Length: 88
Image 1 (cartoon, rainbow, N blue to C red):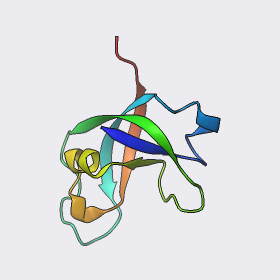
Image 2 (cartoon, rainbow, N blue to C red):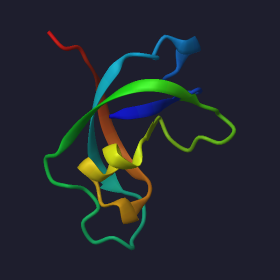
Image 3 (cartoon, one colour):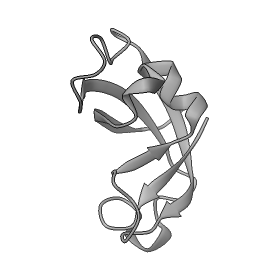
Image 4 (tube, helix red, strand yellow):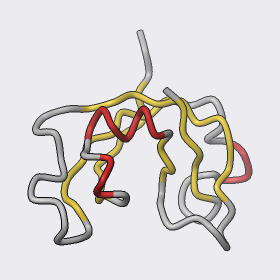
């Protein structure tokens, strides 16, 4: 699974590129979806690009496939918890 890192919050001059993060949906951002998060689900994504500050509305911009693993795609934007994931 792939994602882009926010230039403002996570990109850090490209140092996030190639790193993996485990992401979990914490809550939705609109009232249109009754259950936005898939309970207990996480997805591990690798940062492969930067999301420019002037157009990025997120810390991590998930691919559609990664988003659907943890939340209802109709939600669109979610609040997340994430941590760097280092495979042993």
